[in-house]
Length: 95
Image (tube, rainbow, N blue to C red; front, side, top):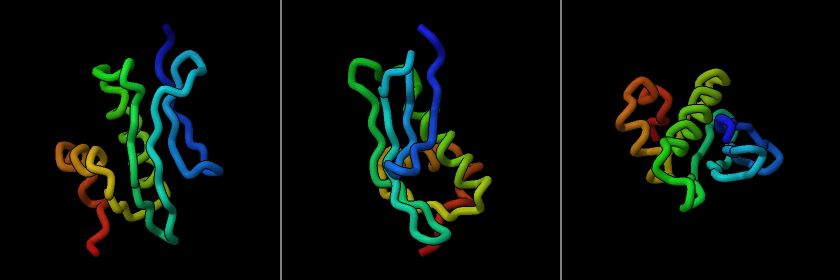
């Protein structure tokens, strides 16, 4: 088994987690000007427990940071991740 790879699929408005070329997770978003609204994160139930959702969300947040985007964490998992990784708290939109 190879290492998981996170890719950005802007045409689908999501980040994807691939394992051996197979889609095993995703983080959906809506882009609104200088904001990115994360709406849903999911990992294949058979593949959970490996920290891959965290890897997926961290990669997406690092992209948002590089692009200077404000983050709106509507997805409960993204919200939880930011709460437990305060280095990303400055990305969260105030309103």
